[in-house]
Image (cartoon, rainbow, N blue to C red; front, side, top):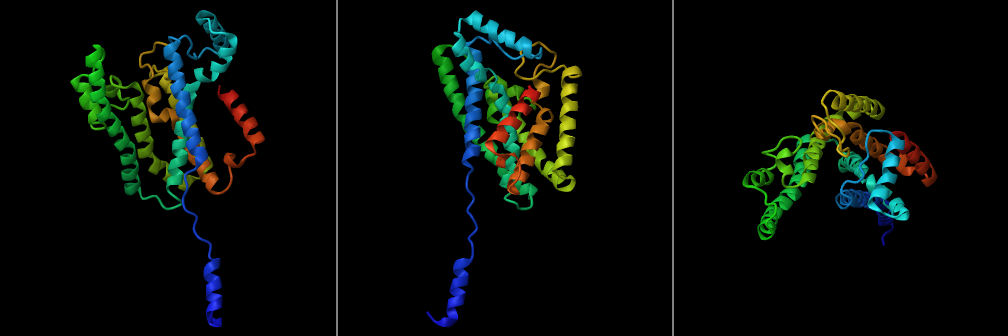
Length: 293
């Protein structure tokens, strides 16, 4: 090799390459666990004939109901202890919301937010899977309903499901006759639409101020949802005028979504709860969970 080219060659080999973007395995793992826990929660409600659902009546009263539920159903105590996490699987819905805020920040890849491109890419990513499931499920449901003389989606609800989101209300009532869990799609779309505004406010006000504001808005809205709008959380089986509809609006979970954004910002800087030791994460997580519970 000519002497004059040696320094150049050495310089070229010493330039670090940009790391290729990789999917975070632990993030996908949390999503899978959350989906399974929500599935098991609904399964135990069905097979247990809604024998137990958490009520806003205090921790002691709920524990008494758990014990009575076991006595009524005849489930052995060891099995009851194993099943307890499934009775609270509804809480993993908030994990999905948290992960949504986290993932949207990471999807920007530290680049400025191009609102138009972001909304187009994100909405299509949400809607194409939904449309695929809807268009494939309706014929199957119709065939099963015909063969078993059971439920068949009527023409109107089939039309509203196939043309979502052109024919819908926020709660997804027009879709619920086909599939109850579809109410979650309008909620996720709402967070997608509001994300550019939240990201702008985060850049302007800072993470802490946006967190405090979102917490205040969430608490105020939840108070209104219960005492003014006549609603109740989706996992509570009590009769109220608006039922669970007020708690399916994105404002009821705004702080959770913003918390996910804040964790992502800290993660990109090599800080935050993701980098805590297991001991610290367990202690802090347990304390926050108990306080929230």
